[in-house]
Length: 255
Image (cartoon, rainbow, N blue to C red):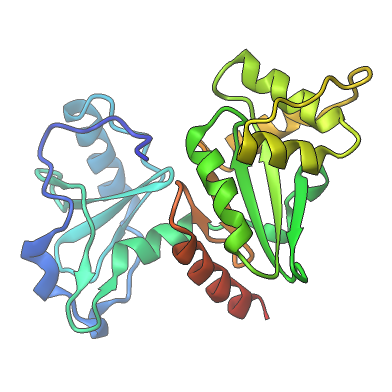
């Protein structure tokens, strides 16, 4: 799932193969770029790369002469003079670590324990000891496929924030489901069996606006989006085995 416009100028392939051998674990200390240099680079890129996202920060990388650009949820790389921009991942060949992915995981972490879980539909399987947060739209096909796969996750509690981003019908369904006596069953029936939720006896106060505001705050721009107990996110649908691996890792980190 891609949220940024495709840049068409000065981009390298998605995997920066020519740089892979240059990374040394011993040289991984990184620091912020001096303000004067950072401002000059920001100005040059703004002039040359129309539509480039707002730059939140610049810092050095393990590769001499290559700088990291942090722009929202994304990371790019640029040379010290701003002549060449790279969109891709830096891999450390000795350990096969994806340094870019590690950086993305770090800058996109959330405070899981402070999420307003009272505004989520809650479903538990097994003892529910492991926790997973999902942002989903009732009319999102990928969300429905994901929901069907959740039955294969053991000992998990899933908190679903319903957000109606695909149209008015999505919001109407989310509000109706929330106002039903058994909102969890209504949500599961709709998402896994396409069983249209019954009409609620009078509408109630729903968290729709709060959920949309939360999604915006967390920069959730598409569904499904998942958050784990260690604060890491998965910004798209994924196979259940991948989610299981992330749950195991997150549970270990949370102990």
